[in-house]
Image (cartoon, rainbow over all chains, first blue to last red; front, side, top):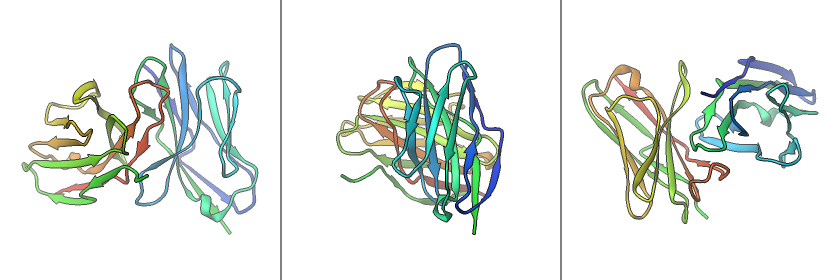
Amino acid sequence: AQSVTQLDSQVPVFEEAPVELRCNYSSSVSVYLFWYVQYPNQGLQLLLKYLSGSTLVESINGFEAEFNKSQTSFHLRKPSVHISDTAEYFCAVRDTGRRALTFGSGTRLQVQP
Amino acid sequence: KAGVTQTPRYLIKTRGQQVTLSCSPISGHRSVSWYQQTPGQGLQFLFEYFSETQRNKGNFPGRFSGRQFSNSRSEMNVSTLELGDSALYLCASSLALASYNEQFFGPGTRLTVL
């Protein structure tokens, strides 16, 4: 069985500061990795994904994540956050043979002015 | 292109009742998955449908069921509601079954069981 661990339930940060949201996974097979963002009273939006190839993936709004196979991690980073980045972020994994996503417990990013 | 739509957005029921939630996938998408989101358990997979057949099922009791119609629209049903069924139910659609296909999520139906 696969699992996802997001150690930080809440991350407070000041506007324009850098941030890293941590994600570790466990799986006995190859996986695809995803980060989703959820704004209040909304569904999940895909932020970025790693399927194969370059281990560094980027989103259109400045987030990036790096797949580290040896450390089984897929941490999300942004060099300078905005108030509008305040949301809950979920890391998810899907093994290459299955369809269901396994989600982490989420990290609430709180950007303060 | 319209996104995934879910109806109703909010629902209040009492224990013992049953409820049906509806999901319309993005046009052209043939796979629909359902997830339950609660503060205590987080996001958990319920089931997935493709071509009107259930292809994958999570670890939920038989009170939770679903179906998919020929136009790919899906419904999920919860019978004999319990207080613990209060949750946000999210539907996600994707083009096909392949595990690398991106899933697009709807806004969810918030179910409150009193």
